[in-house]
Each structure stands twice: as structure tokens, then as C-alpha cells.
Image (tube, helix red, strand yellow):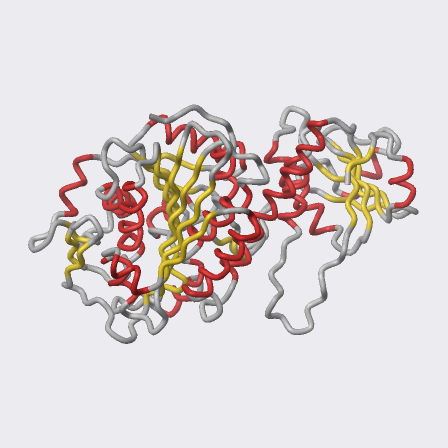
Amino acid sequence: MLRPDTGPEAEAEAEAVVRPVRAGEPPADLPAAYLAGTGFSGEVGQVLQLPGAPVTVLLGVGPRARPDRDAIRAAAAGLARATSAYRRLAVHAPSPDLRPLVEGYLLGGYRFTRYRSGAAAPTDQLIEVLAPETPDAARGLFEGRRLAEAVLLARDLVNEPGEALTPPAFAEHAARIAAETGLDCEVWDGLRIADERLGGLLGVSRGSLVPPRLVKLGYRPKRWTERIALVGKGVTFDAGGLSLKPNAHLAGMKADMAGAAAVLGAMSVLGALDCPVAVDAWLPLTENMPNADPIRVGDVLVMRDGTTVEICHADAEGRLIMADALVLAAETGPQAIIDIATLTDAAAIALGRRVAALMGTDDTLIERLRAAGARAGEPLWPLPLPDAYRPQLRSRIADLVNYTLGTRHGTALLAGHFLREFVPPHIPWAHLDIQGTALSDTDDAEWPAGATGFGVRTLAELLTARPGPTA
């Protein structure tokens, strides 16, 4: 709720009033010695509650030289975790840009408690942001809330157990979200997938008793000059197929559909943000299990475009279902294709839990994505696709192998090369490997322990930035 910057009524009626404090600039009305004794210095995310009626909450937002979006998001997330018990807060805005404040508070306060018996219901809070009533402020509040809701949608999906979020269940969620947000939606069942010759998706799904789905979503503004296609990996549980994963590696495999969840989250907010770009999204959905009739090592699958792929590792399944979806996306003639997937452990090992890998064939598209990620607070690090690595994908009996045996070197880049094979050279393409960023082990700024929803804000930022055509 937006209030004038004086806000006397909001402050008087609130249980707590939040005052931002910059590092090295203690409030003039509080003794410096007292603050020093508490350890509060105004660093990003520090929170100090002072008794009174209302309670005064000091919120550290970092030094004046760094009042950026990332710092404000992180500070607001810390505030949300520290003030969740209050029903009514009055928050003095630390910056005229209200979007990161709203994003950080809503994202930092997220908890997934659906399956916890006796879990307390979320507090119904009223947060009044004290800032000048301007069009920019109103837009910041609106955009921050809608983007946060899109991220929370993705987080909820990723946090769901695999037995609950099967491919058909995911497709039902997508159809419901599409109906609520004005998106076009098609859901293909197993028969349609077979008719469309999606050999990668069919092959991976053979090992599951649950049938696959493919979801196609479409967004069309009234006027547009650019059309982009999105592809999101949707393996709702990845046991590794016949290349069964060790038990220690199975715990996070319900999150192997985080790419599809990110795409769905981003698509859900395009209409609200008046996105000027036409967008089609393809979500191939399956489990990768060792039941029924799983693909064997040595089998050959035929992709939609006729490319034959020898299976050298049944746990390198994501690239198989993504290949079919990339072919479908390319057939519609978009001006760019972006895919997002929890694809390789190598990307996580190289870049850790806060930075996702970015690869592609078009420098302009890659830079647009990197800049969008920086604005959204989701860092992306470009990696190369050296042509010299391409021969490692050759098969003795088919066109390609899905995994290069005998090497641990450059496997994230080899996976990127595999996907590249299914995008025509004339279409700019970029690939986001979010294996390391889809889950967080601990609360970290606006990322809670569990699903992060990484990629939603980057894709939404790119698509709503009103760029010119890529090609």
C-alpha cells in the first residue's frame, strides 16, 4: 500500500516502523555508543528492533555508495524474516525505486509449509511503504509484487514432491495458470507426442509408469516487432533411468523441472507487465525412471528433426527432451530461442550456487540476457562453446551421442553443444544452465532454503525491456 512520504497516520497505526540506515551513518537521534554496543552498523540485511510503541526497526542497507537493487533486495529479505510476526508495518523506502524493496520482502518471507503438520498459517500482514506518491513509485510497487508472485509460483512447483507434481499434474497447473493470465495453452498427451515424432521425450518417458506431456504456451501483445521462443526442461523426477543415481544424489531430483517452472512463472506475468514481445514457450514434461521399458545404454533414439542419438548415459536425459522442444520452437521461426534447464553438475561445480551458466550462438542475445540477469539480481556468467569440442559428440553408429564417455572435462560445454545441434544457425540461441542456482541450501538474501525460482526474473526482465529485434 502506497502512502505519502510523511506518513504520520501509517506510523501511528503500525506495530513497527522500519527506518533504513546506511553503513557509517547512524541515526542522529540514537547514541552512537548504544548502537556500537548492539553490533548494528548498517551493513546490508542487519536488523535491530528497539522497544517502543510502535517498535522501531532499524534496517541496514549498506553504504551510500552502494544503494543498488541487489542490496535493497537483500536488506528487505532480511527484514521479512525478522518481522514476520508483525501484522502491520510501516516501512520508510530506502530508495525511490520501490520494486527491489517489494521483491526482497515478498521473496525473503517465503516458506513452503504445505506438508508440515501443525505449521502456523502465514501472518496476514499489511505493509505500508512510506514514499512519495508518484507514477514511478506506483509502478515499482506493482511490478515488484507481480514479479515476486511469479517467482513464488515457480518455487511452489519446484518444492512439490515428485509424486504430487507428475507430468500430467504439471500440465494441469500450466493450463490453469494460462487461463488465469490470458495465455494460449496446448497440452499434448502421449499419443500426440508420438504423432509429432518427439523421439527424445518418448524415449525418456518409457521408463516411467506416468505418461509424458508437452505444454505449449503463447503470449501475444496487441502490437509487437519481436517474437521469442522459450524452452524449459521439465523432468519432474530424475532417478537417472537405468544409469541410476546414488541415493545421496536423489534428494534434490524433484527439482529437475526448475527450468520449466521458471518459464511458466515468467510467462504468467507478461500480460500484467505489458510485455511488448510475442512469446511462445515449450515445456517437455516427463519422469526419468528405471521402471517399465526404460531406454538402454546403446539404444538409438530418433529426434523430431530426424537426428539419431546413441544413448551413452541414461542420466543425460534432459538434453534429449530439450532437443525435441528446440526443434519445435525453431519450426515456428522466432527471432531468438532461449532455453533454461538444470542440465549439468559441471555448471554448478564451476559457478556455485549463486551464478548460472550462459552459453549461446549470438553475442547480442547473450549480452541482453547477462544484462537482464544483472538488473534482476540473477547473475549469469557466459561460457564458450569451442568448435573444437564438437567432434566429441560423434557416434560410431548414429549422428550424435547424448553423453561423451571417458571424460569429466568440459561436460557443461558439451551439453551446450548437443543442444546447439537442434537450433538452425540463422536463429540466435542462448542456453541457461541453472543446475547450481535452482536450489539453495540456506537462507541467502532473497533466496530461501529450497527452491529459488531462479530465471523467472531474468526472463521477465529481458522480455519486458522493450528491446529491438535480435535479427
